Amino acid sequence: MTGPVAADVRYSVLDFASLDGWAEDDHAAALTTFTNTCRDMKDPDWSSLCALAKDSTDAKAFFELFFRPVLIEDGNPALFTGYFEPELDGALRRSSRYRYPVYAMPREARVSRPWLTRRQILEGDRMSGRGLEIAWVDDPVELFFLQIQGSGRIRLPNGSTIRVGYAGSNGHEYRSIGAELVRRGTYAPHQVSAQVIKNWVKRNPFDGTQLLYHNPSYVFFREVSEVPADRGPLGAMNRSITTMRSIAVDPAFVTLGSPVWVEKDGKSPLRRLMIAQDTGSAIKGAQRADVFFGTGDRAGREAGRLRDPGRMMVLMPIQRAYALLPESAI
Image 1 (tube, rainbow, N blue to C red):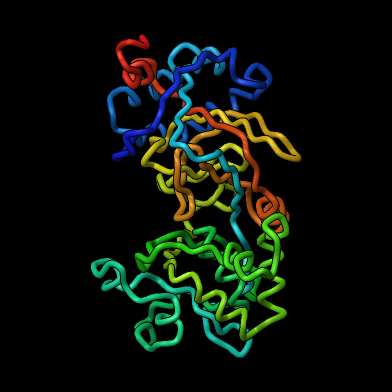
Image 2 (cartoon, rainbow, N blue to C red; image 1 turned 120 degrees about the vertical axis):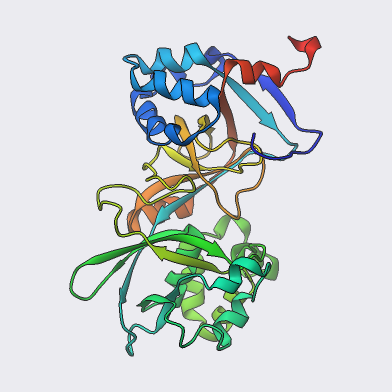
């Protein structure tokens, strides 16, 4: 763990035989993803394991030998959602089509917390004339969802692409506009998805704009076009994340870089060893994870449909796992 957690959090050390589907997974794929970020984990326990991982010829044996699965529970039910890297149409200069700015982070937003709300940023003049526009896009709803995802690609008119990644936020708490539509009675909980929200906002331009303002959080970006096109976007560890092997977690409960065994239930069950390489403003809790689905519209549709229960176990170095238990349980 990387921060303080509530006193009523429960830890259970499990064995690998109790993990549903463990033997059938592609552990080598998980190990490759793990080594992409483990070198950035500075604690000696993790540094030594990272060195061993790079020389491992049996990925399954590596995880079983040096880790133990730990179920962390904070009293809230498990919830798995999905996220993706969107692709937007945009340009480097404003025009009648491309008129919605993708902003870099202003200096004052870093020191004044919280800073202006979403409404104040978009309706005021604090951003104008400062050269903070990285690009301009043609759809304010897609830009809103780009902010939720935290990274994306912008296709320019000449066919080239620039990539943007999370630079920071205005410091306001994220509020779900999907939950707001449910509260208003517009939709039932099971009807809400990213695509449903997008369609409703586009059908109701004025009310849709006001709905977007319900979320006061605003995300700023930085250009990260140096990341190769065949690699995933940068996650919270400033390394590329991997489709269907990387997840976003709450770092108050899960150390970034840790392997996490996912048992997602629902319509399309998922049993997979994934790596906690990202975070998100809506990802809070010990049993909360966001699965990275990849880049583009198809990935977006798949990610937007995901809202399932299950459970997840963090793979911890053996000594760390057993140190969490009370002496009477050892």
